[in-house]
Every structure is written in C-alpha cells, then in structure tokens.
Figure 1 (cartoon, rainbow, N blue to C red):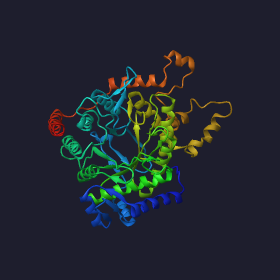
Figure 2: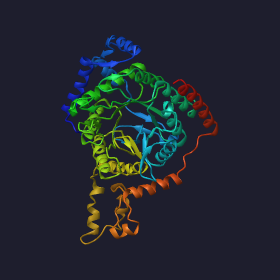
Figure 3: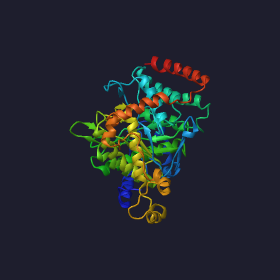
Figure 4: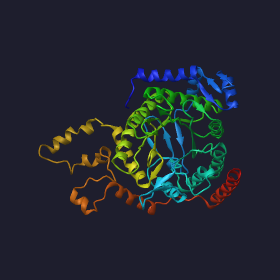
Length: 473
C-alpha cells in the first residue's frame, strides 16, 4: 500500500486529533447524549453543549468498532465485505440535477431519472447504490424517502442513504423492514450516512439520526466534509487532524449508543477555492487528504470511504477525466475500502448517465494500477522467452493466453483502434461510446422485481409517510 505520510507523521495526526477532543472538544446539541458522555467519563458543559473526551475513552470506542463490515444487498450475491486491501465504489448521492442524455442540457432531476440511474447502477459493477439524485417532481419534504423507495424496487445492490430528518430515516427503516421481512438487523440492506457540521459540531437532528441508526443496528458512515480554509484549517495536515477528530468523536457517540455498531470512517475533504467560494472537489489536495485519512484510519483498523471520483467540471471533458483520476488514485493506492461520487460532475451537484459508465472504466484502471506488478517465476517467464527465442513472437504461446486477462485490463469504452478503423466504426469519442452503452444496458438489463405483496406494502407505507410528513409542514 502507498503511504502518503511517514509513520511518525501519521502518529502526529492521531495525537493531534486526540488533543483536539481532549482540550478543545466538540459541540453536541442533545442533552440525552451529553448525559451519556458525562456518565462515561467525558467533561460536559451543558450550558454551551460542549464536550471534552479524554484519549482513553476515544481509544476504547475505537476498539469496540468492528474491524470488518458486510454491506448487504437485496440479492445476497451482491453483498460486499469491507476488509483491508479491497477497494469498492458506490454511486454519487444527493445530486439535484442531471445532464439530459438526449439534449445534453442540465435540468432538475425527476423520478424517471432516478429510476433509470438506479437501474443503471444495478447493471454495472458499482457495488453500493446511494440516492444518486433527489427527484424534483415529488414533495420536497420527502424527496429523500421517495428516492429510497425507488432504490428498493430497482436495484438489488447494498443501499446507502442520506436522510433529511430523523423521522424520514425512521420511515426508510420501516420500508427496509418490509423488504427484509422484519430481518433488517441481521440483513442490513440499508446503511446510513450521518455528517457532522465542521468544525466539530453535531446538530440535534444529526444526533437523533445517529441514535435511530444505532438502535436499528445499521452500519453508519461517519461523514465529516470539511472545507480546507473555510470550515477547517487551510493546511492539509490541520484539516486531516480535525476531520479525524470528527470521525473519532462520532464513533465514540455511536459506541455509547450501541457498543459494537458497525461504522465506516468516511471523509469528503476538499479545499475551498478562495477565488470562487466553491468547494473544489476535483482539487489534487482533495486526493492527498483522502489518502492521508485512509492511512490514519488504518491505524484503527476501521473500514474507510472517501471522496473518490470528484470533479468540478460542468461537462464531460478532459478536466472531468483527469480530475477524477487524480483525486481517486492516491486513495486507491492507500487502500481505501470505498470510493464515492461515481457519475457526478459540477462539484457533486449534477449526475451524468454517461459519466457513470465512464467512471466504471476509470475504477477498473485504478484497481489494476493498485495491483502493481507481480514478480514470480511465472511472470518473469524466462523459460518462455527461451522457447520463443530471438526474432520469435509470443502471440500463440499458451503462457500468453493463460496470463493475458490477469496482466492486462481490457477497457470497454476507451479507443485502441487505428484511426482508419476508428473512423470506420463511426469516429465515436468516449462520451458517444458511453451513451450507446447506457442505452444498451437500460434496454437489456432487468432487475428482479420485488414480490407484488411487498410492493403493495411499500405503497401503503409510502402513503402513510406522505400523509404524515407532507401535511405536517
């Protein structure tokens, strides 16, 4: 694995995070959790909602967190286990816009987009499906819930959600219980992303979502999203130390609520571009901070998830390609378990059908790069070189056939033809090739449908949720 930090630097960041939590503390906007922290041995200032936690308690909470996590799909063949040395990837989540595949213009996402994108995720080797877009043609109070409902019906992959509120999350859990026939705790097809507000602040609703997810025994993504220079120090080391402290205090709270609850040390750090005031998710510094986060989290043996395929480009162009590769590569080489933002452009605001397919190809290349070069008697091939000899060729050799597909990654979209052959095939650029692939997958792929009785129960549950959540506002 690639270490962006020396062992001493990684230890300094760990110690800095412990010092932040012991001497500076975090703001917790929930008296029940403040009381639990106080009872566990932390210092609590109820008037300010501030907590300070000694290193011993943070270390004990780290020990309670499982070292591997299974994320389950509706079809159990899609289950994945987050272990050291395995890198998976998941769809983008929470986007509001799409690039229309017909007109190439950007517009608000609708339910039809959500369904097609989720079905596309189901057809691709994307391992986890998030609410890739929030549809604009449903009541805004329940766009997150409506998206989850459609995910349950259109993919058999493991699901990750962002909830607008505690109550919305409770309804999502009810839907998942319907699909799993009340076995969600033992068959967690649902995991929950819960993000603090950097720096070091946990709102009342975020804490209630933590409590709700922990009560259900669901895997929780610890999700700080600091902006270097705005909501965290402009220095990369300072942002990583603060971000790590936010992960550690969130894990501490989770382990207080439900000891042994699965957590993923997630992190979406990026600098704020001081010229525009926008998050620069395609910045090279984002990739560096993600790699550092993964390395520090390896010390705790916690599964990790990071930004991954970030880009600030508005269109599918060269900037999109090189930013996604540059941001994702350091984290992959560092051993991140999950990469995010697959399919997104425009700083994770807009999703492209074609980019979702292209990012799958980028992922395959990154995984091949992370495997490096195997050196053995088989791969050195001295005997084979001797048999072929000078002026010979290896094309018909059994050794070539045996090792070709493990040694070389074969792209499905990238052009490797000669120019005459490329022109004969239609002179397609990669976006055109991806568009054809999208159309092919959406035409041919079929997701196994839920039982009709289950779908009717989902319909009833959604009607109740809509009556409660929409009419109450």
